[in-house]
Figure 1 (cartoon, protein in one colour):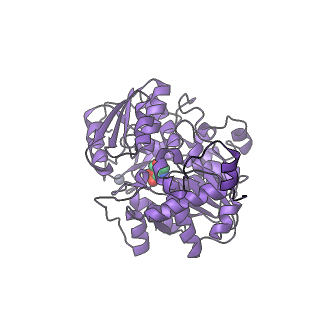
Figure 2 (cartoon, protein in one colour; figure 1 turned 120 degrees about the vertical axis):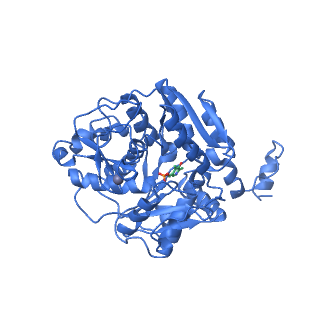
Figure 3 (tube, rainbow, N blue to C red; figure 1 turned 90 degrees about the vertical axis):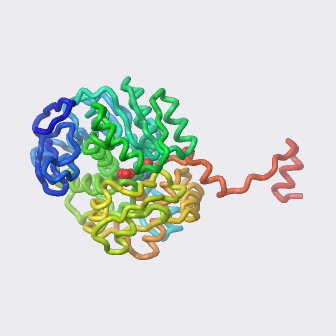
Length: 421
Ligand SMILES: *Cc1c(COP(=O)(O)O)cnc(C)c1O
Ligand SMILES: [Zn+2]
């Protein structure tokens, strides 16, 4: 039994926590590291018992949010938090596909997620639901921005106190979109990894639920809903390729897990495992560098330098698992310079009408490189995960167009602009 001030609850026995390093199993309590080896814990379900019980029809009858997949998420009962989160559009992207040379291209548009326009709404929904089941009433996070927004908003919905820790240099939009919810916002002099280290100490000192620290095993399960939705929206089938941005490296590993679970439960036919591709900014690409170098481990980066601040994690918690995910699925990685990120934002906005934050620019730029290198499986759908909204990093897109001088409200001015005089 691990010691914790927070009381565990038991559910139907469907889930346990399993160490990702030594495979030791423990009950699904508020723990995040293995007692045997200090490795990270991951939720495991008794999936076989869901075969033929959790059916497509049952899921399709449920409301359109993350909880339509509740049996595949760590929750004990009727979810009361994270209502309306998820179920974002999966759009065909033929114009971008032609530009990048990718047939059957799709975009998963998490830039429209409720309530804070990023994929982090998914992980927070699950973490806060679980926090409630553990009787935790103060939550928090270490954030590069989007997580701060989502914990703040969803803590407000749930009536929880929240302590949000961020690096001092975050984009102003992300600071405002956090503070507006009436939380304790603490700016730290340092980079994200300093914030994260502090939060590990905070989680130990107080009985708070820091969603990406001591609730991380549950938080990260929320990412699977993106993969579940992609498969359901493709008519209950798996894509051939999926391209995801990597910060801590969790999302990409959970996309793989989501596809594998759907096959095990029998919701999609067994097929070739989707190739998982990871995208990072060139100014902070420790996971991509390891893939390209054939390295066995991740070399942490001390001072990230990129406009993609939401991905600027120099010491990624799930780096080695992301690396294994890319390698074992036949995927690969690619990184994007600041200029390429802005061009990715511009391409997506001008060809598909989707305005993404810098992280999406990273993913589009990486997709272009991976396609040019011939890394993508040729037949079957390719899905690009657009994980954040352009209005949160508006300044980055400012150089994509020219803003002319204001003109007088006269037809002659428009005729002059249109070149028709
Ligand atoms: C957090 C985040 C990611 C990736 O998160 P992981 O830590 O790799 O799971 C991707 N895109 C955006 C916009 C994010 O905020
Ligand atoms: Zn272990």
